[in-house]
Length: 189
Length: 396
Image (cartoon, rainbow over all chains, first blue to last red; front, side):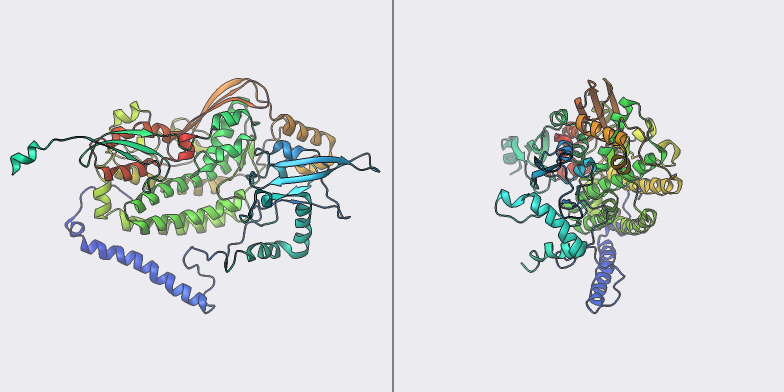
């Protein structure tokens, strides 16, 4: 694009330029309309129509690196890997993680979290907790975006059971299944 | 009849425009002094989005400041990340790896494209050309998807770390960029056809919001605002950082310093940024993306899980924060709207003693009254649009 100060007679006449503009927008409009119609009949799926996505009925897949909702990873015996070392709570810039540590009666080596709560209204999904964890106990790889549906503040606080259950769900259903379940209640509202 | 008209008393009218005006994207208030439709004076009130960035940073560790910087200029968060991290690295004296330097350049330039697309697209749509605005948003969306794939989030990227970046570029990144740029170029040429010879657009942009070269320098304007007046000042050229001195690009200049010049400069800068990214992708070397220094960079997860030294470094960095040597430093990068500077003071503890940001759009707003004096009220909109005031950065 260059700066051209003077408008020629053709441009000052206005109407030829209007028609030229309509040609540019019209080309795009008809192309998108035709591609959308073809998509309706299941044709030309590899050609992108308009960039908009009919969320929540359609969606774009989240990338592998997407920082979604948290989960607490599990040992093979189903207990949480978390040892309540408080590193995630320390690294968190939003101070949204609350941990209450407890000790096993029969295991003097490790602690475990009695309570592990994430206030997702405070959470900024920066991923520092995942980086801070020294034993791979918290991850954000569920591929599900944060909830925005709740009726009280408590609805957005995710406790230890919920975070552990998300790991089980992810293993059982996979990322796609988890996402489908998450988005279902937003569809056809 | 005529004599009666001249006898009418001429009073100036005070008009308050904003703080929440539909045509100003951003919360800002203009106290206007009007004579009819003519703007005699404009007093700009900023600060509606003040959230105490500098003070919040003093409560956080050096690493925890990075998410705060995402929220400065939210049209180009990666440049803020890079600017902050490089300021801290300058104070430490840390030399980052070559691959990381190229990654930072690529991500900065993608953000710059973003910033300019937002600015130009929104201004066009405010002047009625909403179609061109949507085309630019479409280009932005295509690049946004790539950024999302790299960083894991679209806007709150938190990608850069002190001493490197969070992780390497994903597989197939170069191909994605190439495909995206093909679409972006096509969209930009469409926008060019819609806007650059459009009489309405020209009439509203050309000769409006003019600022002279001397005034622009006197007010300390930087970025496209300064370059539109013809001053060749670009931080990337004047004080080269990262690998900008090894890349071939031009600094587009304007001649008159009006809104149309700013628009043209921004569009030309998008083309230059595309060039930079393409060159950087050709030259990018393999290698690690973080420096191997356990005092500043978290060790790899294998070392944390497998060795006591790794675990100790990991705990030390997170519990106490990175130890930055005492001192003060100023470092500036070329942000989307101009020179984005970070002035940092450290007292040697794990937390910053003081962080001050030099936001380009805050300084641009201080010169706003010079630009709009003598214009019509309607001319405020494109002038404000082309400044691209971002509340998060201006008010901090």
